[in-house]
Image 1: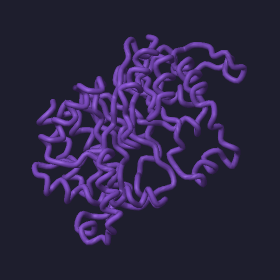
Image 2 (image 1 turned 60 degrees about the vertical axis):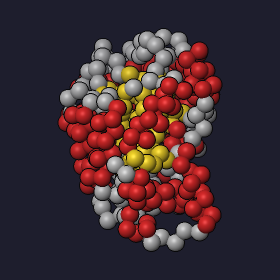
Image 3 (image 1 turned 135 degrees about the vertical axis):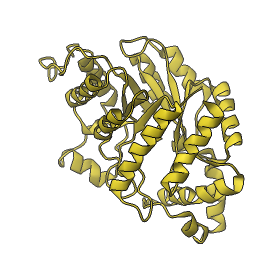
Image 4 (image 1 turned 90 degrees about the vertical axis):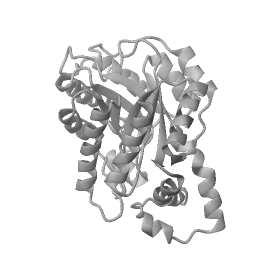
Length: 330
């Protein structure tokens, strides 16, 4: 099983956005050394909890700082950008780092309504043409002429570059079908809702049509993981993220607490029950148990790659999660 990294450049309480981005650089260098297959940066707007608002820019920096690991976006939020701009950005990235760039896109906004309208300069956002937009971007990346009048007189430069891998993020059967039909990879966000099914992944495989971007179906599954040598330490480090999830369910996004603050945070009995229920979204436990669970889920669901997102308060504890999983699985 391949292991990969999803990073959101989290700004935990008491830290800065600049430090969060430097942490992403440090994580990319470590993941490259440990043998992780790829690292993606997410896209978030309108929050002081994450510093990853321009993942394509961060990806360029990370690609320049690493040697073997694939670098990309997980994902660029398509609704904010034209297909031509998407194509030009990722063709440029691939020209600089041929054979190591991933064009990963998502249909979500990556922010609240204020962010959505600000990104579209106050215009009504176009949210119903995401698959068409991706198809057009893929054509432009592949030096093809799209059929749409708006784009059929354009070329996306630089031309004749090594194609990036293309991936569609999703958590639904419809995304899986569309990814398969377009011949791109499918990245399932298990940490969004914990509702992965064999049927969804099989639908992707059955609908897959080979393309210039991918010869055979490829599936990655993203997990939120907090692990350590012992259950006690894992639970201690996991509680701040559990509380952040509770806040998100109540419509609040804020900087993650430290473990010391989380330990004293007032939780109701309902809160504690919700945290336990959310453990299908957040894998917490000793590293050997987590490694075994990932292997069992890969065997059951038939995916190719586990992408690990870990949000711990300190950078050293976060890096240790990736070290421990590499020790067990790579």
